[in-house]
Amino acid sequence: MLVEVAWEVCNQVGGIYTVIRSKAPAMVDYWGGNYCMIGPYLSRNIHAELEPLENLNDVFGQAAMNLRKKGYDVHYAEWLVTGRPRVVLLNPNVIEEKALNVIKYLLWKNHSIGTPGTNALINQVVSFAFLTKLFIDELLTLTDPSHKVIGHFHEWMAGLPILDLKREKTRIKTVFTTHATQLGRHLAINSPLFYAHLPFFRWAEEAKRFGVEAEVKIEFACASKADLLSTVSEVTARECKHLLKRKPEVILPNGLNIERFEALHEFQNLHVTYKEEIHQFVMGHFFNSYPFDLDNTIYFFTSGRYEYKNKGFDLTLEALYRLNKRLKKENSDVTVVMFL
Image 1 (cartoon, one colour):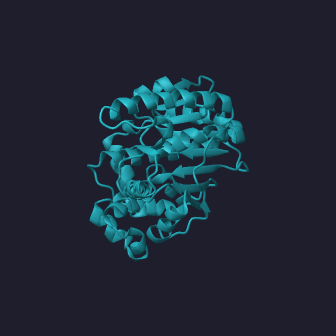
Image 2 (tube, rainbow, N blue to C red; image 1 turned 90 degrees about the vertical axis):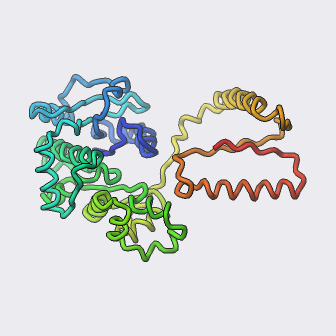
């Protein structure tokens, strides 16, 4: 049995959402009824993407029902995306302040992780972790002790349950995946020679300097305690080695779902249609002052959160500058239009 836990399950707040959503068909195909995603219930708007499951006879449904009986807000449904994975959404906002303070005290007592009381996101993360741990406890109670259970946790916002699951020596095997280290995000923006200096950063001091001590301590603890640490590239593996003090056992790059491109004739037709729309936009934008041959034009695209260095916009612009110089030097009649 595999439960996959991420803050981005049914919650579109970054690139990990795309990873989780696009891998769903492969996970459902491989694991079948032994697979379930766990995420936070943060907005009623998500109901349009869910089909509630009324039959609670399977182990995930029974665990959800048991938590509901204890007064927690739990949603068990199929996520209406390709693959239709089953999801359990746990509402972190129902945890009252007094209970939250107890949870945070135990986090400090048992794991030496202090959390600021005024940080709304961290409060939600801690509450979500508490509920996720309760749900996993229910799963372990409902399944035979010989039944193998794996928990896959993405990033610090979902990884906190690992700490108590390991402290209590439960039988679940845990995987922690970091897509980019918290400290690495801040250092990469602020340190021009980030990768050259990577072996020399003192993670605790840098976390304090950037005001992200709680987040970094959570991430560090999750990476340390998990049975297996994985990441998505050689670059982030280097970050893990130096900032989390553990070399990932597995590097698993994000993949592409190529099945959606198998009907080539359909995509060729769409390509022609969309390229014509791009032509129309380019003519309207440029041709009053700068006409050029559309049949001899190459379109480039890039996208992503605008973090100038972290997301590589600096390299993109440098590459365009060099390409432009070369095209001019060779008197090329090719025009390049770049969409940022």
